[in-house]
Length: 150
Ligand SMILES: [Zn+2]
Image 1 (tube, rainbow, N blue to C red):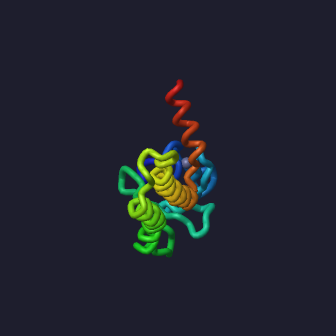
Image 2: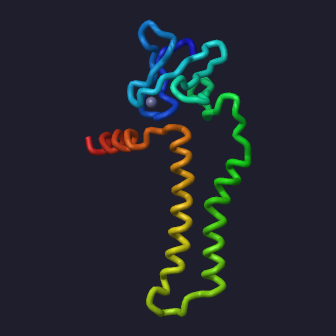
Image 3: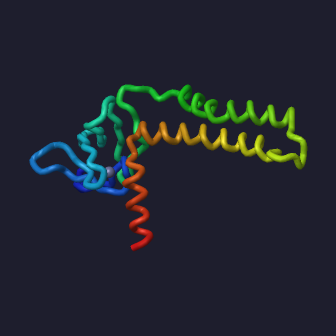
């Protein structure tokens, strides 16, 4: 982390972070987040978030973000899977046990409802992950669209 002074941004993955003039901190020119580098530990810490996210430089990329002093246990992953799978299974089992009369109007609805339940609960989890990492989704999408239509 010492042989160069510009790095890819670990949050938006679009911009680059560089040292701010006369300061220890580094900032991304695209998403404007501020970081404090720790050259000794080869780490980068997000300065404008509490508790801060920490990345480690492996020579090429930033490793997966970790919350400083917080263990992200398996409980969170299991909880996320349960939120998506359980409601979908409940509705799916009901549809399977009491199927609609074939050919009747709205007979497509229970299956559609099961799919919608899955997609919406998955959406909640994805939204939570985006919020957690403060990923600038709209800025990222706009930048991607701009690069496609240029
Ligand atoms: Zn950025």
